Amino acid sequence: MKCPCNPTRLYIECCKKAHQNIDNALTAEALMRSRYSAFVMADIEYLQKIHHASTRPSKREKKEIFQWTKSVDWVRLEILNTTKNTVEFTAYFTENGKLSQIHEISFFCKENGHWAYQKPL
Ligand SMILES: [Zn+2]
Image (tube, rainbow, N blue to C red; front, top):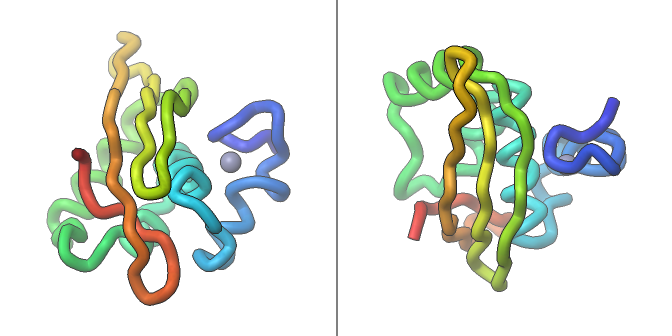
């Protein structure tokens, strides 16, 4: 199976490593890629786990995110720029047959020794 974050790589050699053990995401970009792949796979538990505790979605929001990501078809992820703590990306998806995109500069920081998604800048 190809990795959702990058069709030139295999899932087992890419985001699966982080999905199995968060410590395997060594950079903010690796964590961002594993976050996108988790959206594609509707792995809501992983998304919650890598969310910084200070901004982690509530139980109700978690349910809404899960239902939303199940309702769209993810197309691809484009990483535009990265720094130590930020990743700028565009994620493409179709919703009700219409192509849409999310463009964001995400801020990541370390929490309990691993990378965590904190917020959009
Ligand atoms: Zn990947």
